[in-house]
Length: 121
Image (cartoon, rainbow, N blue to C red; front, side, top):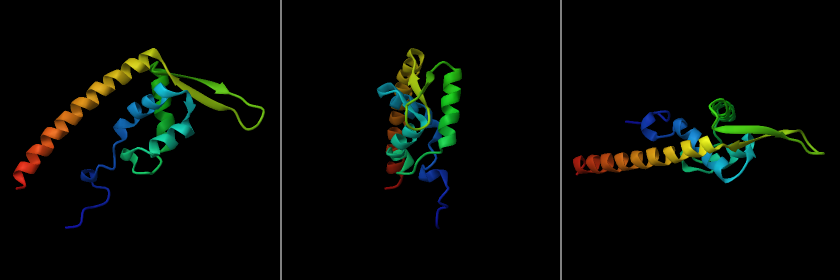
């Protein structure tokens, strides 16, 4: 049986992890949406494909409304202005919560993998 390439069992849709990915980047440096997409595309969850840029900007807008990130325009003498984003103290607290949540998920996934492997012997 051939598995459909869009089947959730292949794990190619990890969009709910987009927010902690964005916050982790912003915890390291203030940057713009395009750079966030480039960094995220290097993570295993995106398998070398750039994530949806519109989705990144949508998430940034939502996080800004929630007070997790702030933005300002960076202008230069050359090129267009860029909107730079940075994480707030509330965003850092949220990121710490994500760290715990993801660690708990990893423990649950490890437990499930052990259970699955036992049944496959």
